[in-house]
Length: 291
Image 1: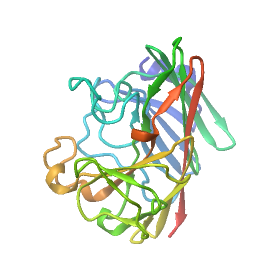
Image 2 (image 1 turned 180 degrees about the vertical axis):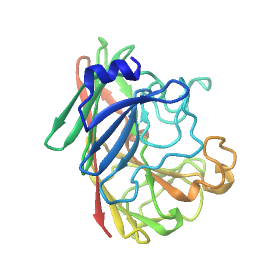
Image 3 (image 1 turned 135 degrees about the vertical axis):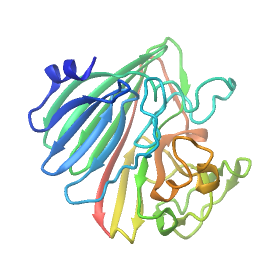
Image 4 (image 1 turned 120 degrees about the vertical axis):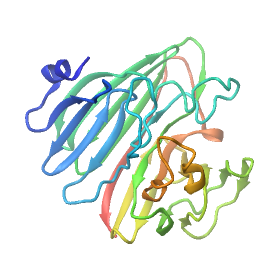
């Protein structure tokens, strides 16, 4: 559906409207009491969330490609049913089948927590439902139902790009006791460390069996981004650093400092095995606190 058709069905006056990019992507635009947010129907991808009076919390690359069928760099991409490259098919798309797929908007309504959008997507063997609530917190809930007649294994993640003052001067707490898989070092297993995580080089690590709360501390912006999650055993921390960022046309060497990815997921050892007809739900609640 185009923006006009969506607006005629789902617009909430003064809170929710729809627009199209010059290349034909449709996005929902949310505003309420000074809070603003955006979500693209392609990929069901959150592209902005900014509480009233705050710096943006979600990072979008200024060079992101906003075109049909192209993955969008930044925001909160939805990853399913595999994380990273396909385990056996190098021609398959990175991070699965859904992040550039057209999702269906099923409902939009005002709730006590803000403006909630509910979207859905059906794949062979799976039905996905995604609830996104824009308010003074950002709520994300991804439900996966196995519609096949046999058990199904999969990975999934919410690939959150968080806006920060400078990635070299923020820390992430909550991962101290978790073993990680370092994808920049031939998948080496790294035991947990006593200190909060501080990035000093290209980082691409999958943390296993992580607690339900992680916190990004940003002293320069005097704030903490608090990530509360449920149904998610993994966290992925990523930043490409300047050399690799320079090779990425939709990011570029000048934009790596402004974000850190701290992703909610179930990947690697923490993948999901779901019986026929069963549903798995993964939720994330993102809030902003003073530093």
